Length: 199
Picture (cartoon, rainbow, N blue to C red):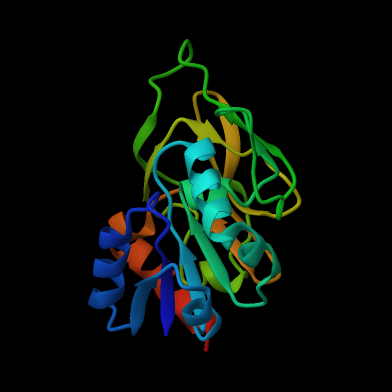
């Protein structure tokens, strides 16, 4: 059973619809006991980093996410919150990946970065989350803030003259900046890869 964390800052409907299309067993919950009984966790996110972190702290989910041994996939803001800090609201995040989230410079390009984009190097196609996915596959992005490259980057993307972390992974914690649930066949493959990692 995959659990989609419901902390009132995530787009749970589109993620649940994507899992339904894949025939996956899932639930939407913020109950830590139910999360503990899951095989894997999807941590979606939309909106403001500061508000999202406050929502996590209110329920104790911030501590739980740091400590759980279960596979975790952060999506969009969910991935960003896995990093140490965001300049959005000067927000301390979960600190599972090193680095500070920065904002794209709107003098260089339209912000947010919205639409389809491919990967650039580094791209670690051998990582099980990226199995069957090519560097030229397109994924759908909507974000104004980005994570710089780090040792945990397994897939990068380029926009507005910046190469940023698109996919990050270390141990059981994984994150994607794009929306796999809105990214067609390639996005479905990535979600299926994550489901397989939970088995």
